[in-house]
Length: 108
Image (tube, rainbow, N blue to C red; front, side):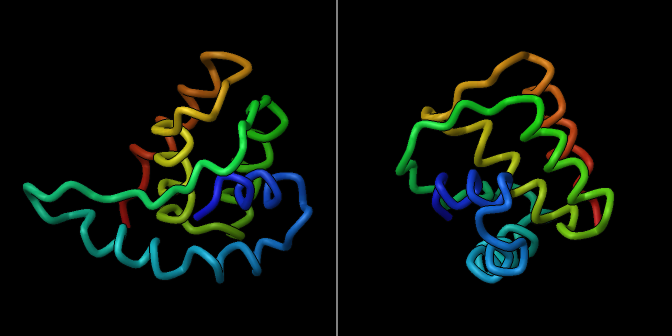
């Protein structure tokens, strides 16, 4: 997954369907490893841009989950990637808290 793809998806520059197609295999691996004990769950992120994540971006991500446009595992995978990235700057600590909540709430 490219960091630029996340940004494009959050700004509706690419469709959610296009985005889901691009990350589908990665999310399936993430989901299959989720409940395995002692296994770290890899996040495949290419940090091809700097991304300043704002409240409106977080609101958009929450909306996609609420409307079931993204599964909880897809949202968790994206949230993990954003939190682990060195190229993401968060507008506020609340965004980080909200992303952590998405990761924590990814049960099947």
